[in-house]
Length: 185
Image 1 (cartoon, rainbow, N blue to C red):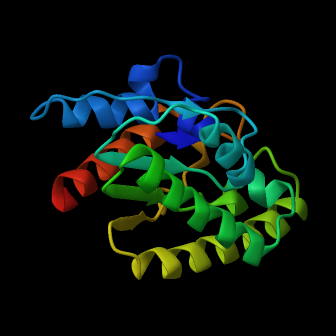
Image 2: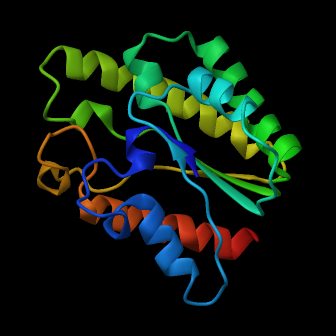
């Protein structure tokens, strides 16, 4: 799993309640699961690429990405971001022998209570734009599956900070991720 603070599990007290814990917990019911987490608060797609390029090669059957919110916050241009996302998928295949990539879409930033209006509206619109473009590109790519983050709009299910997913959102995200892995792998 590669990602930003959501990939790292910010908003959950323990990894078992976070995205990785939910995915591993679900998949380990029927499979032997070995995993690695490369996720950091504030990570962008470009920064994650630089980080992964410095790591030793390993082999993983599946990779899950959880990136994009910090790209939106930094004002990244759509074309450059899509290129970085494509380079990330290529790197995961070539350096880490990944056969299946689950690409998580962008969350509903327009519903993040921590962001004041009109910033929330503006960043939400931008996140939806990047999300739609990523969905289109990934849908045409062999070995990739796009996971929309169209979860409940109930802000009470977010973490106390009003910005990160809470345990119930991670539960749904993790279960959907595991289900996709089971279906395509």
